[in-house]
Amino acid sequence: AGKWVRMVTAQTPTNIAVIKYWGKRDEALILPVNDSISVTLDPAHLCTTTTVAVSPSFDQDRMWLNGKEISLAGGRFQSCLREIRSRACDVEDEEKGIKIAKKDWENLHLHIASYNNFPTAAGLASSAAGFACLVFALAKLMNAKEDQSQLSAIARQGSGSACRSLYGGFVKWIMGKDEDGRDSLAVQLADEKHWDDLVIIIAVVSSRQKETSSTSGMRETVETSLLLKHRAKEIVPKRIVQMEEAIKNRDFASFAQLTCTDSNQFHAVCLDTSPPIFYMNDTSHRIISVVEKWNRSEGVPQVAYTFDAGPNAVMIARDRKAASLLLQRLLFHFPPNADTDLNSYIIGDKSILQ
Ligand code: PMV
Image (cartoon, rainbow, N blue to C red; front, side, top):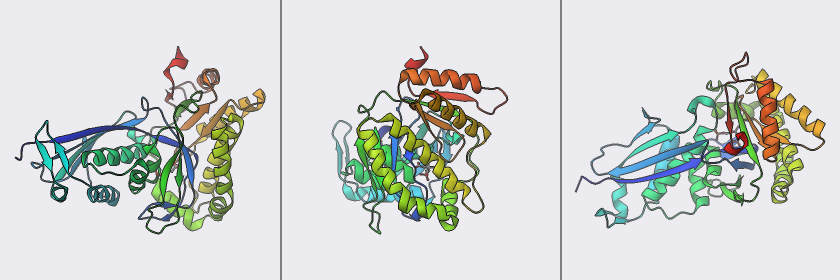
């Protein structure tokens, strides 16, 4: 006894919202002011790999992110660890001779190692993949018998957007009504095969860390923006219905229109915050212009764009042909390492480069 180690490794992709979550009605539990919808990205590109280990020889919980030890003291890590620990069950691994009883989990410590295959500081929703992966791996390690949706409600307490990374394809985070947050969870709208013509291209406009964290940004917006109240109550509920319909019918024109308008409204709400929050920069704005002009000249939209709490552009092309034309245009207008601060592209589907 005392020598064994039990380990579980999981891999989780990040997700990008096409109807945005911005604003919490409960900050501690991370309950949002509106529903949101996202696309989970291809795990080959933006994903987190996390190994969780338990052993009687560990004397405290510890975590390493990209090889560097980080503190687990934050309330969000503690919430996720507490929730999963409380659901831990008996574990028996005959091969390794490991037997852990339900009650043992209270006294056992964990070591957690997490890697992102993309720059953590680039503002590319690393916390979404990170917390989803952590919760999923811990649930497996501790044999917690919860379904994906229930796990999503736990990942939500790490980072709101993380709840949507428990599923692939198109995912909806239902805001829920309960005060305890039990019904604020993610459901899958369609799996990854449903609309596999789509190709995602990300322009890494800046790899600098964002100036306003999403937590403090949301807080300021909730406190000061009248536009957010209107958005959450009147606009988003209708858009959610329309977006679900567009996804179901693979209606790219509606999908693109809703995605772009919703991204722009999210940034308008940031601008409506006092003091105003600027996440996009000149390069982001120029990318929007290039895409808008192209879509208009084609008559039917070829590409949707969306921006999170940073200047990087996530573009969703209707098919491979549109993606390769988009890439040509982007490389023409924004050659990497020129005077713009745009430094690289991440292509959702390798084959379009061949
Ligand atoms: O989950 P957070 O706190 O990182 O917030 C994410 C907020 C946005 O990315 C801007 C929108 C979204 O729905 O993911």
